[in-house]
Length: 507
Image 1 (cartoon, rainbow, N blue to C red):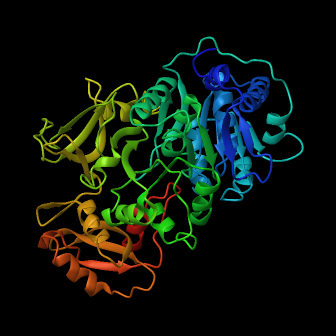
Image 2 (tube, helix red, strand yellow; image 1 turned 180 degrees about the vertical axis):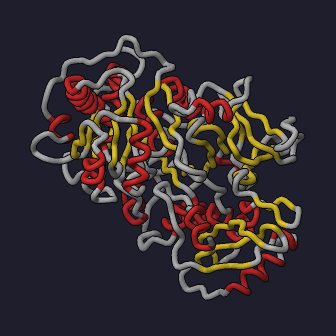
């Protein structure tokens, strides 16, 4: 056994334990740790024979499924680096990211959009080999079901070596690739353990596995502890509700927009969610009325969490008992995380209840941005603190609140305006299902707010209704100058509202 071979270690303790249930497979979709380890060995041996060595990159362009786990564990045995790409991107964008990370082999799914990605990449001639997930010959499916099961090791692998490259959101230019080390995986697991996950838990994962939330929030920690992952191919509200009941799910995590969609699903009223120990919400503050709806109608309690690609998904945690009393807070730092908040201009640490930039330090930090030393240097202070780009404050009780992203804040008439503050008020409106606020240019004020909303079924409020409501609940300078009602909100693969798409609507 050695660092990186998490499956081999798990098989020592619970080889016959149920590791993964893949809902995207119609039959024989349940896999023990021993079966998973055999699959990983076969794939690792194929990769080794192909010429993959320590530090080489292995790409994945596919919808969620067991193939992500196979690839992660196989790469771990070899000391290779998994590079999962966002299949929702345009082929040209994926190609640019491939040029940055130079994987020697890429596994891809014909289901993933864009459907012509294999043809496009073949024409570019800068990938040594493209391998389809399915097929009778020379496919991923063949490699994990047939072949050599000899042990594969990389004796020189250390905890500081990179396990995965995960791309950041890319809101300013092309996404950067964060180097996620084996050490970061383990310390993220430690933070999760102390924030309440157990080896007996059964977790339903709906987050994309090309994001930190999908691959590391609960999935890898759960498998390391010996729990079970129920993996979906994509998020479908009705399927999620049925699966929680059918599989006795104990933990489910999502972003607020997902919980909104679950609560309006056709089978919501009949859904039995009694096996849930708790739901975890992240990505944005969970609206209190929605928390209360789950508590009242389904007796489901919530925790709130916060994390980021570069530092792991388990940075802050708000306990169940504080979910309403401290609504809007991300809670307190997890055990192995150091935190400080500094003034944006002076860089001096601020007092409680003062807003500044959130900085983090700890062993779950990435080692840097791949082949981007300038960006890495800008992100880290000399003392190891990482600049998150998030505006935050801590209250007198030691609970942290994320005010907004530094890049989302805009200045209107000389006043700092935080869209998240306006969105919190909008979510309290009885007719609003989803909302997002951005800053747009204005000749008089520099920037002004523009709100985008979707309405709950059967509601017919207009722009004037919403603006009047905001005027009744916010300072004048914070009230957006316009409201646009959408049929649906642009949503990312992780379930977050895409402000980049909303900005395109007004550009």
